[in-house]
Length: 117
Image (cartoon, rainbow, N blue to C red):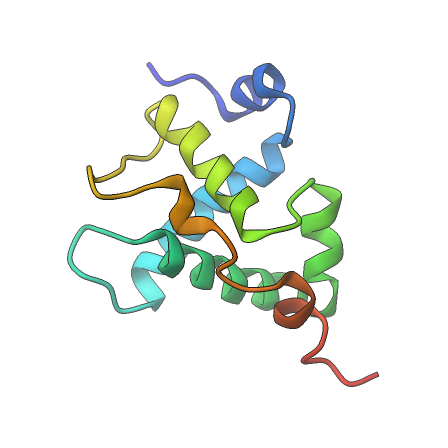
């Protein structure tokens, strides 16, 4: 039986359960919406899917929402993914690395600069 996301978040302490749920939801979203090789989504592709999902869900408030959850860079997405891999909520290929999530995009550019105020 899998450890609940709420328990994982509580034990880890860096990200709340809502952040973990968002990344898990984003994996399914990415698999459906972004063309990928069968049964494998790279860190960069997942980051792109998470960007699109966040903008779809929250629009101008996407960056604020993510920051509230202590997600401030694409590396934070990777930290959550590898935490979820540890608890068997996700899996990785031998060629995957947490470094695949480093600097995929800048949050300000991805979530703020595109909106006209």
